[in-house]
Length: 251
Image 1 (spheres, rainbow, N blue to C red):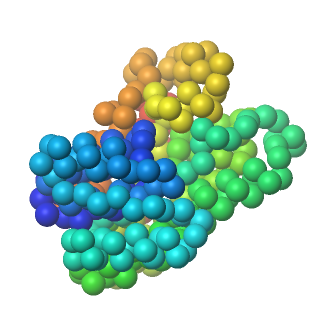
Image 2 (cartoon, rainbow, N blue to C red):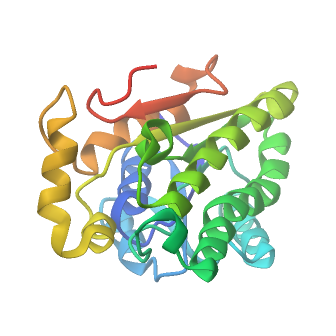
């Protein structure tokens, strides 16, 4: 499905990003795993299964490290075909009433979740153009499509990702570069546990009860949509935001 494609995944040190990187390698891709966290475990798991991967240190708010990630992809594998913009502030955020959110945390959220996507696109799009086209998958959130209260900074940042996805799809279509987003519900990961803290079980129950499919998803429930968007099977799909939320939002 992704045989010999070169796939860059940001936020690949753990959680969903790690799952995307491992699955892309399983499907035949060469993977560049970037994160502010160490990606050694992700690379080890890919290589132990016979795949090829390199890990890079990435701070998406720093254009220089985004460029270094693109250079690593070109140096190790000759370029890039797919960019998965997964890195985001989530688990470390503090929720609350909109008028009580911390100004500094608001700015950090926008810097990572919005500007970070922009920085990575700027770094990687030249490689996609050189390859004759490719696919960008931006990770948005149910927070934006549903309108999650008490986390306005996170919700707003992910709504911006959806707007960026649509605008980039129109701008990059002439280069045969497709740009899509997924909008997952809360997935059972470390980040979700950190975000909801001691209320995680109650939060997951509330979310689950609002879905058509009454179970909380794990990373395995997300990877199929991302891999499809990365592959040539979705070659005429661009500018879309696909909800992967068990039937919570129906657009």
